[in-house]
Image 1 (cartoon, rainbow, N blue to C red):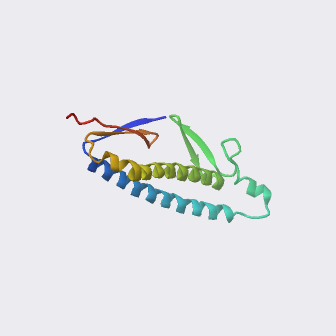
Image 2: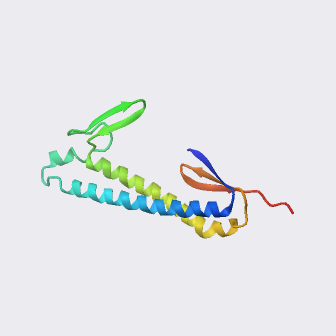
Image 3: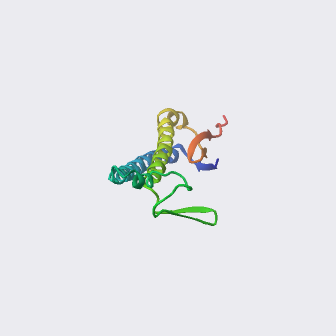
Length: 142
């Protein structure tokens, strides 16, 4: 869980941020979907009928990576060289789901929350793993 805070001095800045993030999320989903389609085509173009050869491409995880896939670890980061198409498909699918979840949250904010925040100064948006989960603002004193 990674908590992040973003501060906005007025509602227009917050609204502009939400609109831009929605547009960026949609572009990202399109890009990832294109990459997913390309990876699917590569997977589908693997030799049919040669089960031994095809099985080397369907491994998931580090222990059954065959073929020319190499795994390294550098300073705690995993590096995969020539990952299997199946592994690539699973990562892209997971990435699309994560961006879609963020997009849905931002669209809910735009539709349901923005109207109620229009007259609120100093909005703080609270994010959990990149997804907005809460908001803070001060009440105007009369």
